[in-house]
Length: 68
Image (cartoon, rainbow, N blue to C red):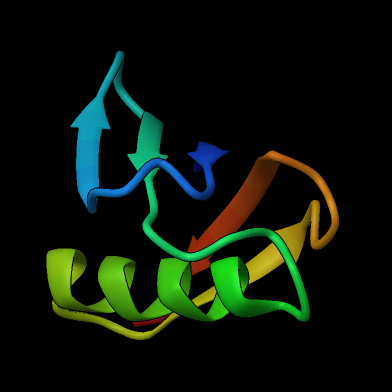
């Protein structure tokens, strides 16, 4: 699943675009891994499953995997 992250946007929001593409707005800045931590918490709540970042730890474009 592909995620485009917008860190430091002042709000938390998930928008689905297409089948497996999402745009996620985050409050936290992209410093000291804060945005990635917020992203994982938000996606876990949204999908009600564990998620992990597969690719793009330091990029705004990420690939995540939902664990069964």
